[in-house]
Amino acid sequence: MSEIVEVIIEANQDIKQSIISFLAENKIERAFICGAVGSVKNLLLVAPETMSIPPTLKKTYVVGPLEIVSFSGEAVDVSEMKDELKVMYPHLEGNCFLHLHASAALPGGNVVGGGVWEGKAFMYLKVCIAVIKRFA
Image (cartoon, rainbow, N blue to C red; front, side):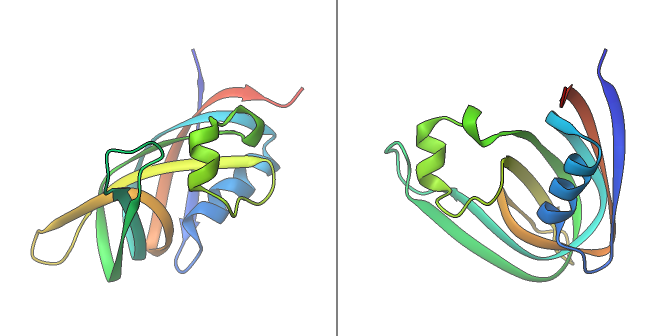
């Protein structure tokens, strides 16, 4: 059974950078992001726009606060990424590829979703992570 850990991302902290830092500090090499509870703001979401591989991505920037509805993903070493994904993420830094997907509710109940490229915690975001492998 996997160990489940929690990272709490405080207000105004970058979501992806906070998770990557937590993984590095806790020597977690591979993980499954199980979910999250909380609120976020200023999300940059992406979704495939074409059927080609790699697809052309449509970017959607959502300003303001949103409530997380679903949140999942994976963290893997960049060396384990498929070549198709590497083309889609040309600005990777470091050894960790964090692949996140989320849906979030806007005020009034409309929901947006897609791959998370950028975003910050609004009040806070609690992220549950299943540890698959730690660094030796």
